[in-house]
Structures are given as structure tokens and as C-alpha cells.
Length: 182
Image (cartoon, rainbow, N blue to C red; front, side, top):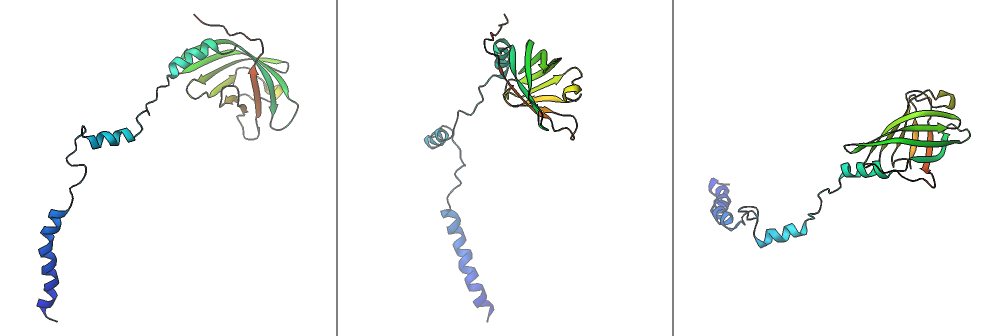
């Protein structure tokens, strides 16, 4: 095989390169004209209502003024036992940014204790701390009630892994009127 026979295909390819480069389409993004009809049609196809228009600060104010002040239900430990009646009286609901600060008293069975907590107006997550010793009813110091939908899905989160915790079911008491702040 001679050198000429090896270079012949290479000469054909190099001769065709300028023709291939001239025929190649230009990239679609250069030049970009945001006012062109094609761009306008593309933007219409894209969802443009993705801006979050929810105002958690305003919802916190609404929750603080309209949330029921009295809740009742039951608490039962995951380890078993009899359900205990629970009454929660909220004496203070104060909006602080997107949070609502809760204060009040909770009666579990025959034991009454002050409570304080935070309710996130954007996510409806609740943290409710028991402020006195409730170990006689199985709620160890250092634990807290945690709710994922305000008081609808609440559970006692114990401070130790050896305590399984429990479930708190609360509903607004019937006949409860909300007090509005002015």
C-alpha cells in the first residue's frame, strides 16, 4: 500500500469540511430575542404561576385570633394502658412572624400542668412543652408533644428511647367560642 492510497480518503474529507461547516445550522439560542413570537410561545407553554402567594405572617395573625381556646380529647401511651382524658385551655395565642406562641394549661387525667408551645402557620407543625413534672402519668421531663397538623396528629416524643411515647388526640371542644384580639 502506498502513501498516496492512504492519503486519498483524507483529502476527500478535508475538502468536504468547509461545505459541512457552512451547511450546519446555527444554535437556536444565538442570537436570542426575548420579544420574538417563538420565544413568547415558549414562555406561554411554561407554567408561570409558581410564585408562592401564601402569606404565613397573615395566617399566624388569623390563627391567633380565630383558633379555639379549649380543646379536649384523650392521651394513650404506646406501651399500652388506659386512655386518659385531656383538656387543653389556651390562655394566650400571640403571633410572632409566621409562628403562633401558645400558652395555657393542660389537664391529663387528674394532673394539671402549664404548657407553652409554637405553632408554625406555614406548615401547621406544633411543638408543645409541658412545663411541670408529669412523670407520674408517664410523661418524662424533657419530652414534648409534637403535632404535624396542629392538634390533629399529635404525639408525645419522649426524651429517651426506652420510653415509646404516646398519642394525643384533641378536637376543639363543642360550644367553644373563639375570642378575637383587637
